[in-house]
Length: 445
Image (tube, rainbow, N blue to C red):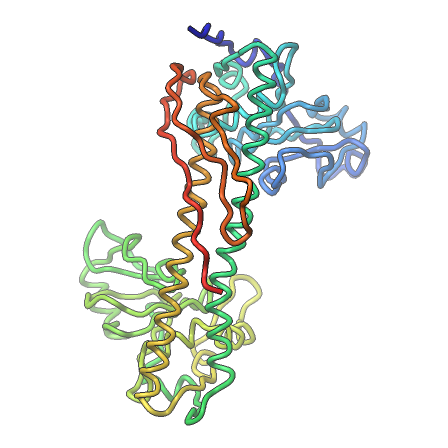
């Protein structure tokens, strides 16, 4: 029977160091030899190790603030905005007040501490308090429990996690690349379709192929718990209408808005403010209204709405939209600019139908690939959580992890976790069910 690991509070095994910021308007405090990191910079990092920072302090800057250099191999935790970013400094480094430095005492491996904090990141975030922004206080952080196996056992666990996480990182990078490639494949095909133009194609402006090009109300509505559905550009960001995150207006506002535009089935909604150039077709026969951030395009009989949608979401249309964007702050497409966009398409409706069928098939295949890769990414994250859970409940052994010897770029495999029946439970956390990702299927090239 295994001897249970002792549980300690972080304050017993670490020195917890607060950060600080010298006055930003005093040049003598800045651009010196002392590294100084913030939560914003921590969030940009792909590696846990950091040896240089975007901003540095002078000796005077350190002396005139509460910032204090941490020794190398400390663990730095962002304690606000947000709670949970983690890095390991490899050189002396100070932090701002949004971070806590944890300097391990004798008997605690810095990498063991890092992995443990990663494993309880959600719990740390839940401990934050505050109305304006949530912050994890030094007092509460010091009370966080940590299992403390003997140092050789800590080092053994770290070695296993290092190897496993390296394999997971490789699989994740390859999967993300495949996801990008799947999206690029369809966009590349759309680009060629609408630029090469087959026989019998004609060229028109959008105002010549649409019965209506307008936008929604320019008045900010008053929202209600229920009533008539109200959509804005936030509901059209992925090529489909998001009918889940909707808002509601009352009947009085609805009647006023419907006098301007009454959306209907097969209309196309185009995001023209903020995230511009993304369109979706109205696929539900429901009554709703739209905000000014959405343009509505209603096709004439000369073009199928589905083909118009494919064009608007193509790189050809996006290039034209980008040239016509107005405003120095939030990008904005004006209606008159949308109306002048040029589209090429087959004149015969039968040819349009054949083209739509071909594009729809490729779109479906692309979406299936994207879904597969998204599932794999989710499974890789679940696998990391499973490994961390096993590591800090005494269940992780070298034989529990196998790394495939023949992973490929197009079908990367991650380390797999075998079922473990060793007793043990992480302090303050419930066990997680283990998950293993399946290898991604070979995508069509």
